[in-house]
Length: 557
Image (cartoon, rainbow, N blue to C red; front, side, top):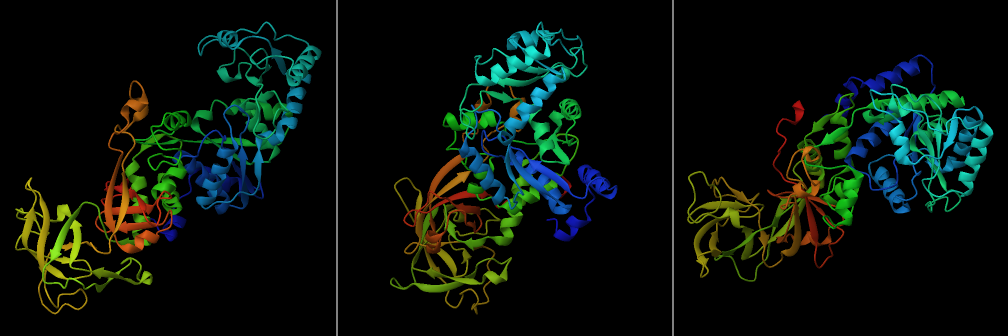
């Protein structure tokens, strides 16, 4: 893992180089960035990169970051999403200077639009959306002027006020910038600035029935807030020309847009539209389903803020898009949880062992470590009894040559307890082993062993008498193909039918008291987090990630 010291030695990314040059040239005394989500869904892993970039820059350089909700589309936005976004950002470890909304500026944006009309730089168009699209031309052919383009300033001012007053139905009129219908950049061919939408807004109620388009609200909101470096993904490069044109014509604070490449994660979809479809159609159990790439889903699965921040740091900031292996994300959480999570023993596929030479009514205390990576976590007591559970895969009736776990006549050590030997077994009518009878070796207790016996295998186990039944949810990737977006047909056709298995295991008694979100390493099985669905009577755990490092060359990617 990259240490804090090594992080300081890393070379600056291209955005950091721009900011450092701006500060050294005296262009700004401090920088101001913003994270501007639309509250129409939950944040996902792609947003995490933008969060880390915007907030990280103002941790590295003097300045601050605003949280601004781009709430200009009332039909898709909701206060539920607003609260979830704030919760996710704080969970990630960041705090904003100001909580702002594009709707805070609706009056100012309206005044800006009026100013453009007064300068003969905007006009009201009665054309339908289909007519506007037809007149726009193609990348190789210029567009044609709207028949309403040459309306007088007075007529446009009157019509725009009528739009604001609700005199026209949805879709009947738009306000368009008057730029150039033959412009090489098709976004500059008289783009729409305002549209009519008679819809209740989550903050402004029914005050407005006209709403600014993203391209009009975004740059002007940046300017109002004195944003110095407005960071967007690469698909907004064509929009930058309009961003600059509007700021220049309105003669307002000259915010500037910079673009960085989106990082796509394999075996994942991050389109809000597709994620909403998964939720609404019941393919997942809500936005925080642990299979979802949402921040709330990752949190419920057991991912830590530190692991997500490390992932974002490792993938970096660049100008070229590429596909990131989800194995890197798993690698980052595995590294973090290895250092921080307490170890516990849980048997997921139980096979009963009967220790024939151990007293029936005795529960003997054994000692084992909580986390060998952190000695400060100390030791814990576990109870050893005559009947215990081990994993079924840890016993083999006819072992292979290099099988070092339990087999007839073979010895293994039980973690924190004794060396045992398998003597005989019991089968059911189908020939399946249901019990293994063993003997324990006296004086072989861990930490007190005086036998001199060396065994190659050490097994985890749980007392059958004291073990607690737990529901364990084994999560895997939601999709079975690497690049879901490039496949033909419905993306849901590529969902992984093996993305969730629910089983019942037996756990150390202390896990009944686990708090929601608390993470543990289940010895030899993986990392698991307590789920909010769990109770003391029925604890529930979600598998965060397996122990095996599936991203073997993490340092090279």
